[in-house]
Image (cartoon, rainbow, N blue to C red; front, top):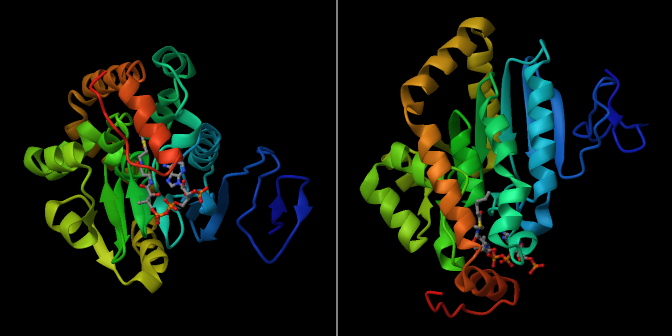
Length: 284
Ligand code: HXC
């Protein structure tokens, strides 16, 4: 197998994550894609380690493109999405969002990318180590199953920077863990550890930190042994049972998220983060 580095298409052999199929010359700068990490199992690694894999617009577009291409690849049956040991993803990129207005947010329409990710037909397994916060937690919840390292921490800390979850957090978290805990996580920004997440039904299993990715691949391999057709239809059916009014909920959440960008508190919260100080919220 030729391993191609999309940027410049240099052949490399030591680091097989930079891979592009000839029909998919998209250069990925923020993710590493390995379509055949194991037989029938593709691996996508979020790769902005210095920013704790903060999900900027470009990363999300690359992820959408990679998933679309892997979904169309007949050799791939299961897709594993991971970050690194320190962070799955610490949320949407606050530095990128901080200065935006509500109208900017509406026009950029970043969630259309998320909508397409949600349509991935093949099973998508999140292998989470470290932080899965804000958009990072929402991305893990958009996957079909979550395998967590014992170091994993989940949370929706948007409230601390003057906004709220915008990529499904208020809807999917509530469905996964129930109203009481979801309310607490969303309104206080408290992180929950892997143990609590397992007890609450947010994740499938906890595995030792050193082998979390290997275990996720093993788990993916179990699913890859099944009929790919039955697998896809079964996935679709489970999602149907849970999707009921998810669309409506997501739209409602989205409008509220955009609206918060009209507030001074959003500017204060995000600027305070960037400037490394505590925010002073005024309710304006
Ligand atoms: C941009 C981020 C970031 C983020 C971390 N970084 N999270 N940059 N957006 N979401 C950057 C930091 O600024 C810092 O860069 C570097 O990553 C390392 O982070 P530290 O804060 O120094 O690390 P640590 O002290 O270990 O704290 C880890 C942390 C903290 C607890 C995860 O970084 C944190 O609170 N991050 C923000 C979490 C958050 O609020 N997420 C929700 C975002 S809103 P420098 O350059 O200073 O070294 C959201 C909306 C979702 O997700 C809806 C839309 C998709």
